[in-house]
Image 1 (tube, rainbow, N blue to C red):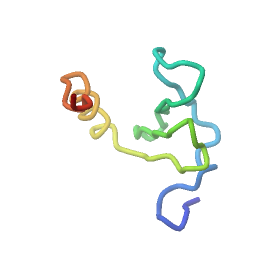
Image 2: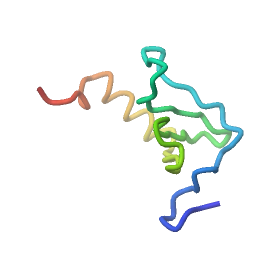
Image 3: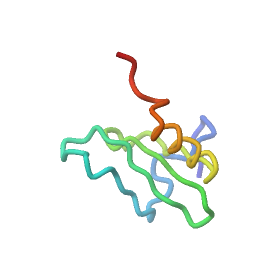
Length: 77
């Protein structure tokens, strides 16, 4: 099921095993991820679950994680 934007509808992937970083507090504000059976990775903002998840390939996810570990996505001072 897709929304009018071409992205999955908010209720897409109801059985996905979503998880978030252990550094997250219980107050929301976290990015959640789910590894999908086809090898892709779904990402969503747990503050607004009405927004559809964003789905990327495994390669894209690995590139993002590598960049994050290397500080490429750190917020500028």
